[in-house]
Length: 291
Image 1 (tube, rainbow, N blue to C red):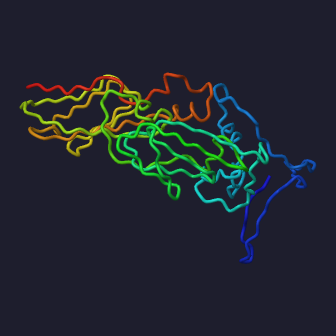
Image 2 (cartoon, rainbow, N blue to C red; image 1 turned 90 degrees about the horizontal axis):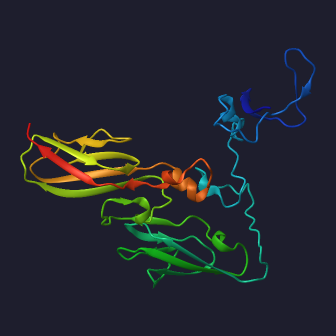
Image 3 (cartoon, rainbow, N blue to C red; image 1 turned 45 degrees about the vertical axis):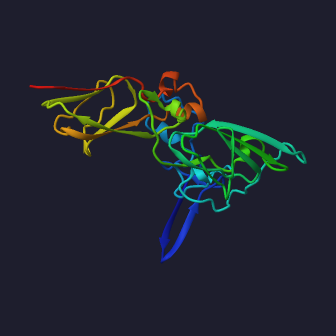
């Protein structure tokens, strides 16, 4: 199969093979061109590197095809060009449908973005919040939200949302230890930065910062000086050269894996419950001594 383009005599030409193409191998008889692609490969047992290509339907294409589902262009790295017609199946024709969605608001969120063509009523911690132009301000310390969506035609349930709910973030107080889920980030995959100011009044020559239990990797900066990151236990950092007498600022950036996100949005046996826990879940200790 061929998918390509070439320039001949200054004129670009495209080639796109199909069922009518034939190929000849090693002087043999012409045969119908066929693209070999397995529908499923268990990479747990298969070791042939070519199998990774087989699992990507787009690997033989020189130009990326649009996502086959309508309204899914937010998954791509470029806007949709309407090649895929935006058809919305209506399971309840001529019937009004109402959906209530509830979720926990991430710590530090200051504004919420809600994309929907349905009539919407939003409450935050039991209080009504006005949605204007798809945005809604959030009060400090907001914990939970509920939106009621009502439409006469089109989609239903959570499909009434045209895109994922998004937020603007500021800063928020968090008492550690605490996993991501207690901060409204139960299915979040990414990084969270914790910062604290402390005062050192002991004149020690050696200082070690130790995190007893972390689910993820940890990057530490002390007074803006980065320490070598830790990807597994022991999560110990020698901060002797960065810590000083008086005021200090310590930042901990914890990055988890894709497991919580995949478990929530695309469950499979490849993620286990213990992989869904993320964050600093043990004590934090700063120890100093003289040498």
